[in-house]
Amino acid sequence: MFQTAIADILQENERVLEHIDAATIDRLVDQLHAAPRIFVGGKGRSGLMARSFAMRLMHLGLQAYVVDETITPAIGKGDLLIAYSGSGETEETCLMAEKSSQIGAQVTAITTEAASRLARAASFVIVLPAPHKQSSVSGSGSVQYAGSLFEQSSLLFCDSVILQAMRTWQRSKEELATRHTNLE
View 1 (cartoon, rainbow, N blue to C red):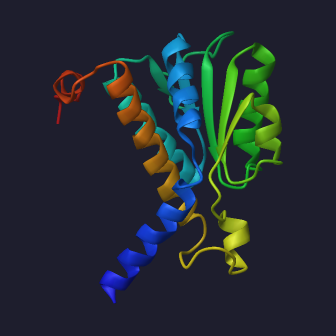
View 2: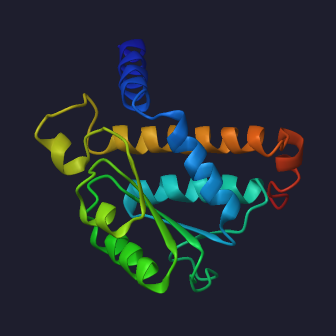
């Protein structure tokens, strides 16, 4: 049973991620390199995936912040917001994207819905073709509950972006390790 569950999850993630082309990853890597500061945000489990991406961005040596943390500064013109929402309709996430865009920050959306409110607020939209929690409740697209497939595939996608950035910028694992927390 366990092996079947693992196989199902891996196959589903492979089906989602095979739709992402190298140009998408390259474009996000370029955005990361050009942005003076990077902000990431999302709610629920999508927000947890955003937080993990922010940590790896920091390990790369980039100035990265998580929206809603007490030490997160104001976003400004030219900064980059990466907003996660499976449905693309999460109210707080859409508001942060819309406000960031009005301020003059670049907004990149990671979502399942290309025609969503979040996608409309973004200048770059990364669509992961997975069901979100509202669509998956009706039984479409995944054997997993709610937005699990979106959350897993967004984590794998962002880890791929980090690996591509490491290769492009010639950053070693040893260099990243120097920025890993030492207070644990």
